[in-house]
Length: 413
Ligand SMILES: Cc1cc2nc3c(=O)[nH]c(=O)nc-3n(C[C@H](O)[C@H](O)[C@H](O)COP(=O)(O)OP(=O)(O)OC[C@H]3O[C@@H](n4cnc5c(N)ncnc54)[C@H](O)[C@@H]3O)c2cc1C
Image 1: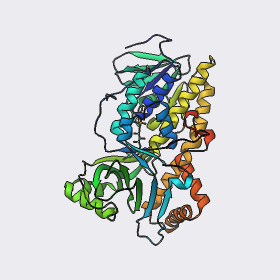
Image 2: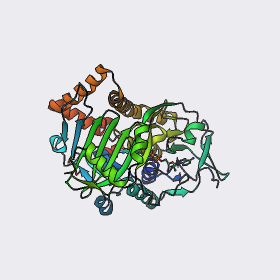
Image 3: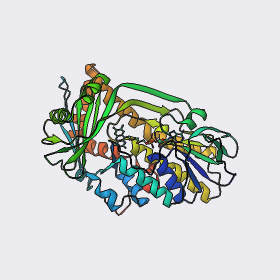
Image 4: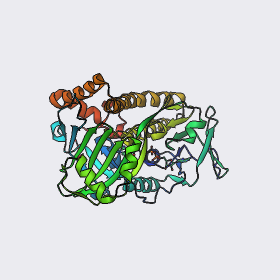
């Protein structure tokens, strides 16, 4: 397919959760928006072993879009307590750290939502808001220095708009052909994910057990069910993936020290390679990078999609504001502002995740001491604990897109 100039204000490439959020918010902000879906149908529910812990600012985005319906809520679980257990058995072990949402005056830190349900919910809402869905893949981008950036499609067509939001994942074609430089670090780890049932209640608590090959994290789902994110070396991952369902249940019970009682009904394990990716620039020449097209981090501290939703909301906010004043929505000024604000949020989080992960894998005693000391400090000193809790959810309010900021009268998690 091909379009005429003026058909669209914004083209989003990639209908993953980050792209769909950006498209829905752009449309809601009055911009004519098209989304290039890529190879997968975003409306179809496909099993995914990931649940996404969305923190308070992200929950505001979902509520703003009217997306956290009773149906989605029934499939999700509030996150009331976060617990860190040092299970490394090293010389420097931290005491257990427990962060309770009520300590910060909140009902919950956020909600844990199955990605297989969240993803189609985003797609349906974007469609209701008038986003045009284009079933094709982007093969490249050109003309970003002119008045319109032009996206090439694999059906031979092109589609042009003053702003392109690239949310087409880790191997983004738009990023590659748009001249962006990417920094990449491959960890010698994979993350294994599945759901499981347990006999003891989780009490809306997520526990991150720090082990010598990476964190083993249980995240609560409705009733006595949880999801697992288990980071290990590839060799051990192969061994775990070969276990029978009963053996896997027994292993999860062992690794979680029986905290969740008897484990059963494990779903099939899926493995995700662990990489850190980061674009040197997040925006230039009418192209904004969002979600994993811009940055990817290992699943520690539930940061990935929470950061990506802030990308989506800021991109939509800047574009809608410029549009309302009749300004160019893909101007260099907007590119520079997006780059600056998103960098301030992403860089420290990426660094903190890298430090925690590297310290777990390292035999270097000072690094282990630093990790254990950091956790102990956060657990013991109320004002450090408060900073960790608030900054863990989002950067300072001035760097958070408007729709994700706390309202003066407070609100539910
Ligand atoms: C085990 C695990 C647990 C996690 N838990 C959490 C958590 O608790 N909290 C959290 O915030 N994050 C979490 N994350 C991170 C989160 O899953 C990701 O950040 C998020 O799913 C990435 O979304 P995205 O839209 O950026 O990318 P993707 O989901 O990869 O979407 C990219 C889209 O682009 C499409 N596409 C590809 N090529 C093209 C093309 N050429 N043209 C057009 N479209 C294209 C693809 O089909 C896809 O739909 C977790 C990750 C893992 C691995």
